[in-house]
Amino acid sequence: MNLLILSAGLGTRLRPITNKIPKPALPILNVPMIFWNTIYFEQSNFKNQIVNTFHLEEVLRNKLSSFEHNFIFSSDGKEVLGTGGGISNNEDVLITSSHFWTINGDGFFLCDENFVQLAEARHMESKALCTLVVCEHPGVGVQFGGVWVDSNERIISIGKTKPKEASKGYHFTGFRILSSDIFNHLPKRGPHELFDTLNPLIQSGHKIEFLKVTGDFFETGNEKDFINTNQTMIEFIKNKKYQTIINKVLKKYSPNSKLNPQEFLIKFETANAPKDLFCDDRLRIFEKTHFEGFFISGKNVTVRESCDLKNVVILDNTDIPAHSNFSDSIIY
Image (cartoon, rainbow, N blue to C red; front, side, top):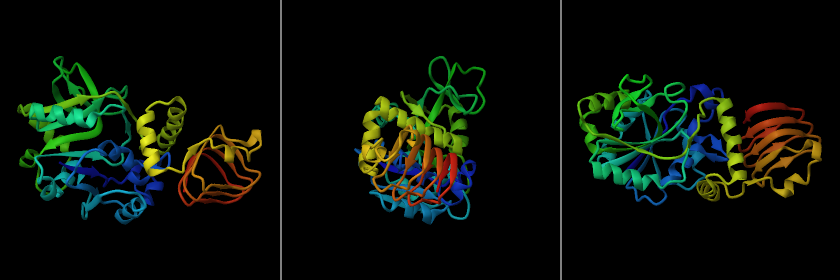
């Protein structure tokens, strides 16, 4: 099989930070989002792992270069091609296997199930054109579109509007398998969304399957949600939720990061200590700095004296000037 990691988006709702750093490279607990998605394929023997790019292409390459990976980078060119266009743009590589995965490089989904093997088995057994990995989510039909199914659990449409005949809607996690036959239906060039191709195919009787899994999908499209996701991840570590997958990611991609390391906590006066500190061991904090809530720090971070920080995510190689005041912020 081959793998295509869709990573060309502009990340507009996360501006201004995404004017400098593409969203797939932004960290959840000090690990770029893209790796939280590829970790599920550690046991997969892919011919090629392609990252399609457009926005800040060189920045994305450079941000990922310090991590172990086997990515091939492929540019959308002069315009964002969308999911369908990005797939068509890489047809020459993807078609070398009868089936291939596509995943969203800027999404965030946690699951303890071995859904990769389960989805592949479902896809092959059903001889589907496409198999979507879905989960339940309260935002379906309100905050998000849905994968809408009838009373027999057959997909009848994919989109924002719930059809009258739909009995339930599931949330698409960003993971899907496609048969190489999809290239008989996709436009050969230009911008295109895959779901715009799939919906007519569903109506004409082509087999579009799904695998429902248990997991948590996080909205990370704006600064508030991105910060809340990092905070929730701290709670998951404390409560040992998704312990296997979180430990696997941190061990591989951020082995020096720890939650509430005593060697740092003993430096704080009780009144000034953060509720939760997640940091790399290369953190430097000057005196008279006051913390509230949580504090997440990447590599080579310096916090100068007399800062006031509350619920912050600090990216690698950041030097925070003295007397700074940040609350509910990404600092870079």
